[in-house]
Image (tube, rainbow, N blue to C red; front, side, top):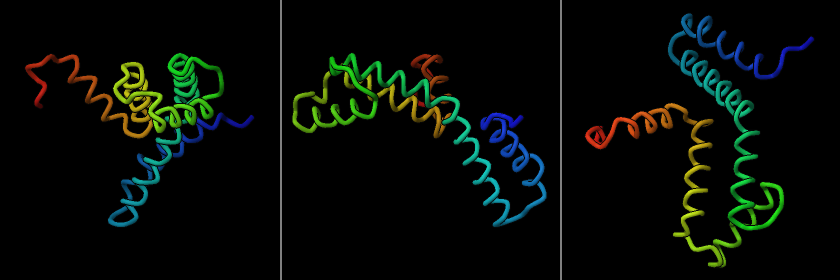
Length: 129
């Protein structure tokens, strides 16, 4: 039985990072670190993207008051913004865009979202750190 793709991505990234990377220097060390990071990004996308897509679709259906798949609704939102039918300052739009950005960053740069989450819970006295 073939392991799931997520397990293969995880195992390969772990091998590159923990077994191969310590044996390398210079250019090849740098390129191997990039390869491991790419695999970890692909792993996060495989794990998180389906739920993010479903959540975005639900937000878009509520925002646009219509049915459709996420890609079609994203195009409809683009058209509504471009035509001025959807004001840029609409609270529902801002909320959707912020959540979409959080979801994208959870895949592409999870350290950034963890950092932001930590600062939100520390209170205003730590806001400038």
